[in-house]
Length: 322
Image (tube, rainbow, N blue to C red; front, side, top):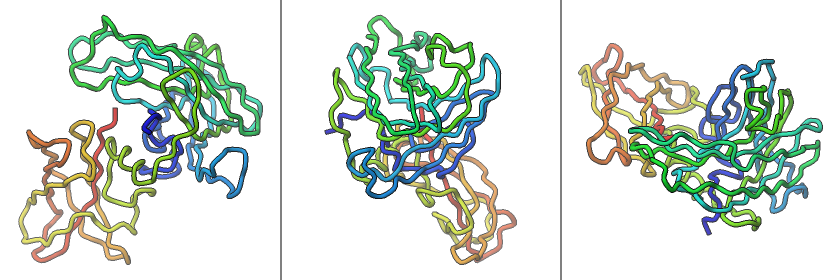
């Protein structure tokens, strides 16, 4: 129980949408980092009844990389695991399935980051660097690594340190020491069923219920609208109010799951299902409570040209990612 430190390792939760080409989060808790090169990350569906990967998973993660030549250019998929204390001084085993559009290598490493605030120690990369030779068929890869102790290290005062798993798809020569000289390449890279656990051997993949997995993801990111789609005109507002003609309205949103830290709130215009547009508003501010910032958030809304007795609404996201 709770042996897998990777959240959403089965790629079932995609709160930010299922096709993403920007630098940042794709499937929940997984983020694409890149420089110079470009990518498109998408949620893919397994054929029902396939036998390449056991226990009938539903989804996997696909990254299509378009490489651009440059020594400092790269593209990788990362998950930041909360707290640099995680597995410090321990042996861990990583297990995942992967394939590509042709025979291609990828590289895997771990990194310890001591966080921000104060004078934290410098992070440590190049932990457990391993080259994995992908083919066009699914293969299981098992990697064992020793995570350094944090004895004698100084942790940041903001409590935002982490252990990072990094899967490199391509890397310019600047990153040779971190990638076993992987080099630059374009291609399609598929990954499924990622598990990281303590010990020197892999045990069976840990399946969580959808409810458990979404709750783990919402500790870091929660939104008021459709959990598996981008915001569009079919999404009605989360919070409704009837205007009295006043210029400002104050709201408190209570989160489904307490956040890792006080989140950054973003608020958006919304439309009623059925095509009735709710009047626009302009966000004025997002004000944190001095107590309870991880469980609720207070912010102000200022409707654009408020009209008495008109219906108004808005959507929001709460981001507490590392």
